[in-house]
Length: 90
Image 1: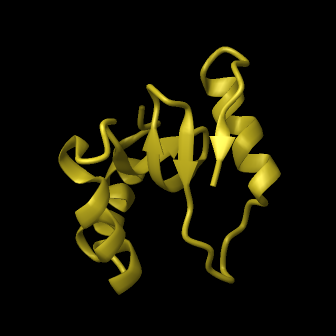
Image 2 (image 1 turned 45 degrees about the vertical axis):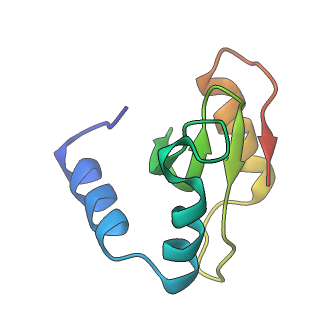
Image 3 (image 1 turned 90 degrees about the vertical axis):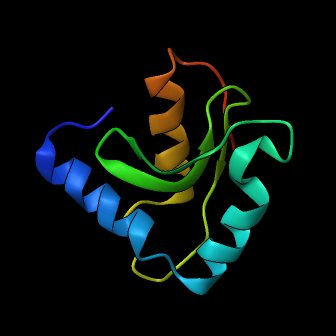
């Protein structure tokens, strides 16, 4: 999942210092409350996505201006990381 310890540490910081919006959304997504398991700040290739459900191939990203990757680039990375299967990107 993580390439190295630096990437793991960065993900840990993102999870432990969420924005108010991410914190609120996580209350609804956590613990399978919606019938699917979500992970937060998951590494996909060289980037992180805010929330991902691998079983349903669904990514939830809360937009912010400093994003380096476009939606299509992240969708392509998610597709590639799961053997080219189609993923939905929200």
